[in-house]
Image (cartoon, rainbow, N blue to C red):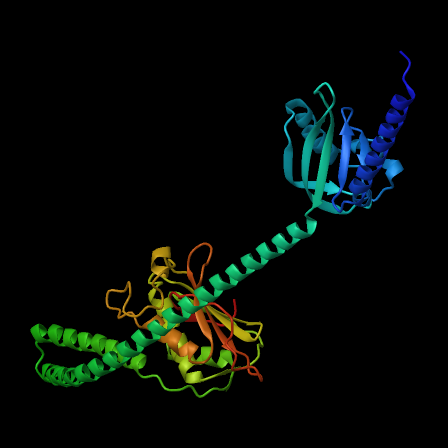
Length: 414
């Protein structure tokens, strides 16, 4: 039956209304701030808005009818295709956070995309609609915040460690100060009766000389030997307890080493080697440095009873002169290294355990440092650092040191 005039008018009005609505809807989509796209089942772009064109850095007519592989690197295009295929297969909407996207200018973006299926009259999925939010700036801000937090955490850890180390150092110095006062008092109390014992032993020795008695000679010699050992221990206690402020003067490390070697009794089976080039003078109390170096050298001698080589080496390192004392003894075990420079800890049968502690205090008194260095192949190395004589000579030298072994016959050169 032929349509009546009113029916034709109604159809025309309805078509016009649909056209107006479609244009109105297209206008709304085009003016939306977020990029919007529609793909058909061949994954071609069939609808896009202006925001999507701006995101792609391409005009509309260059995008419509094409797919992801026409615009994106292969890895990104494969990712988009897999997600689109999943949505067409499952018919379920997707929310994808953190998609990587590279535009036509090579700029990298991070996207949050929502994809939904669009069904036709038969209920079959004919299109997918995607709405994009560019979260690049948000991600950049999150990354910057994360890096800032990590940096703050690192600084907090460093400051906490520095405070802990400072607290331990303060406690160590307080303990050493108390120990020094106690050691000094005990030493003075013991030295007086030792002097009486020593004088009496000398009298007995003189009497034995006028009337030889084999049964008397041995005990008297033993008394004098033990008095000498006890007096040496007391001297160590007094040296440890008696710390005066340093009197820094320009001094050469070679002069200090020469004085140390001149005061030592070096066994014949120990050779001393000195490698002391023309390094700058240091600002230090030469007497205190000599005492510290003598302790290291004496330790070196006692560590090489079967003989060996003791070396003194000097070199400039930054703002300090580094003086290394090396020996060829058995070295120091990792377990013993943990307790180096701690007072009253020693492996020697008759040792007091104050030699290294005293040496460390004396060197630190010069704004210097002393620490133990590992030596491949055995032996021991102490590295003493003293500030170079300069306007910055009061700054603490950053150097290391190591406990030494024994000394030997003094011979210059290699």
